[in-house]
Amino acid sequence: MVAAKSKRGTHAIGRRKCAVARAYLRDGKGEITVNSKPMDQYFARKTLQMVVNQPFEVLENRENFDVLVTVRGGGASGQAGAVRHAISRALTEINTEEFRAPLKAEGYLTRDSRCVERKKYGRHKARKRPQFSKR
Image 1 (cartoon, rainbow, N blue to C red):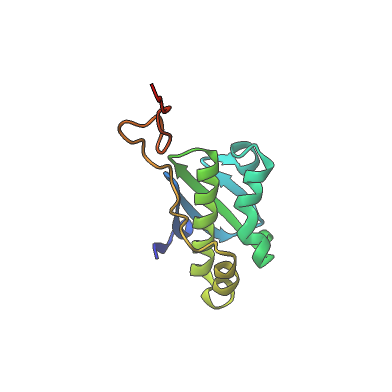
Image 2 (image 1 turned 90 degrees about the vertical axis):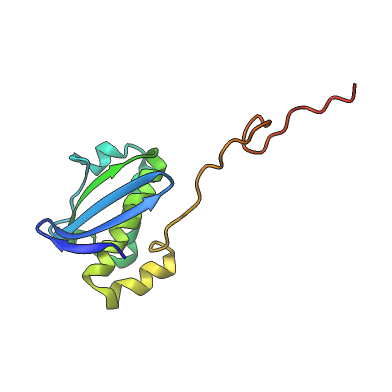
């Protein structure tokens, strides 16, 4: 697991699709900053904000930590999943005994390896075939 203590707090890396997120957790009052913007500005959709907050909702302690996140690559959905993964990993680094079991049960510590399948030669998309012509 890639997590370490730094001057910014506990650090962990999360990945989803092509997105990579670095999360720094420290004691605070529940503020989440993504790429120098408040989370509700960076992730405008409520569903993406919900995805980012899921680890804290499982543990019921959002007000205890400030989160600073840098995320690159992918789209909005992939970035939100990467941030969730990074936050979950950082939380387990802070308190393994209490936090690991509930986060693992929800599947937040597992890297979701699904990504877009590549386009194949002779096909319209990854799997779509050209139209069959009898004559």
